[in-house]
Amino acid sequence: MRKKKAVEPTAVLAFTGLSIAVVDVVCRIFLKKIIGDQGYAYYNYAWQTCFFLMLFSVRGISEAVSELMSERLADRQYKNAHRIFVGSGMYVLFVSVIAAACAYLFSRQLLPKGGEGAIPAFRILLPAIFLTGILGVMQGYFSAYRNMMPTVISKVVEAAAGAAVTLGVSMAMSSCADGVDSVSKASCKAAGSAFGPMAGAMSGILVMMLVFSINRRKIHKHIINDKHHAEAVESVKRSILQQIKPLAFSMGFFGVGIYIDQMLFASIMAEKGIDGGTVAKMFSRFSGMYLSMLLVPFTLACVSSAMLAPHVRRCFVSRKFRDLKQKINDEIRNTMLFVIPISALLSAFAFPLMRIFFGKHTEMAGWMLVFGSCAVIFYSLSAITGRVLLEIGQSAVLSKNELAALLVNVVLTIVLTSALPLDGFSVMIANLAAGIFLSMLNQKTLRKCIRYQPEYQMTYIYPGLAAFGMAASAMVLYGIMEYLFENSVVSLLMAILAAIGLYFIYYVLLTHIKEEELGKMYMGNVLIRMMKLLKIY
Image 1: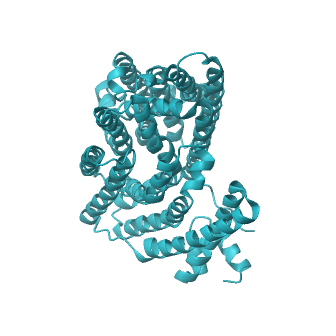
Image 2: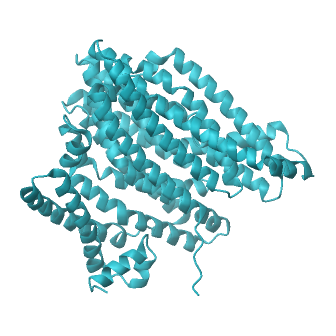
Image 3: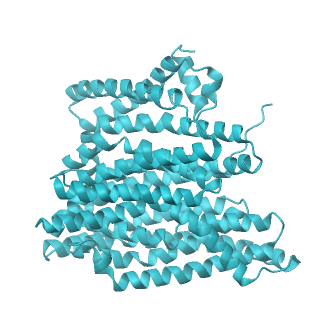
């Protein structure tokens, strides 16, 4: 009888993270239809500003708690592990309350120029900083015990409750906002949408509290029976800060870049005499439409980096550099196998996708996706190489790389927005350039540290050629289907489904990849069965 493979905890969390990203994108699609262009623009302003504050207050707390507690639990130091848990909770309470209070008082200054309509939504979002931090501490606690089920359930509940409340309250507020001017109406709708993240985090906390209550006696028994010397409070504080700081900075590049971009873009456009509401809608085409389409493939890369992290740490500690470099190449290759064709499909079907998902006034967002969908390739590469640098103790160098890329982003945003009439397209170009620059810097650092050499043919060239052939074939098929059925949605769906099969056929024919090698990739067994069905193997 064949032995079943055990499902790795990181793989479960990875799949959960990917599913949540899909839910988030679907929620945003419906949200824009409910609250309209202006309301959606104000909501994006509020959310990007709140996310920026989260980056420097509670972002990375879950991983930090998990890492610090795991170290102590390995030596059965239950008392010290619990002190880390309590200390992390106090840290979140202190930092998030100060951040939220300051943000409430300086809402107008923190939001972009002309974005006063986003103030109510932003203030409603602020409690989510504290609630998200507390939920992260709780999730980190159970992750340290290698019990992933509470974390998975809480994440799913958080996403589902958040999406339901976001859409439900925004619908209610839309009907209540009649009889007021257009700006107040849009502001009211955006404020209704802001209740979702807070409700989601509260729902997740309730799930974790239930799990805690079930395990209360067992946890208390471990702490009582632990005879290890208790760590000093100062030592606990130092450990938490040292662990959180690199994680926050490593995750902060994209969030900080988008926040700075929206502040600069709004200020420059206001100087040109353009109305604040119009500017908000311009920027929303970048942050709320273009970036939403890149969210799922980028999450796939973040998932890959999270799954790679334990292997990198293990190989680096045991000085197995050949295995480490091979593992990095395998993970990047597996990620690019999916990210490159997704990028090609997004570019090929940019206009119908934007029209179907986000409705009218999406031409600029469509052009952004045509020329900028390749950004997800460089964002993904940056995410994986950045995580490797973090795991091999190069967080300081990673921070320098990210600051350099951020500088490129800022300079290009200012120059392009000021000098050319590109609207939000200038921000897309700046972000794409910053992503390319960061991926190059990270790879250069890896070459210095572990003499890492990227593999190009199987990782980029063959997937790129297969993706090009797939996109061209799919566009022809879409044209034929639309002519026959006169239905964009059905035609697009059929073209994309056909494109998926065509991509892997082209890839196998180009690479002459062996069955054993294909089996090692993501969904390898499914691909092998498909190739055998088509008589390619």
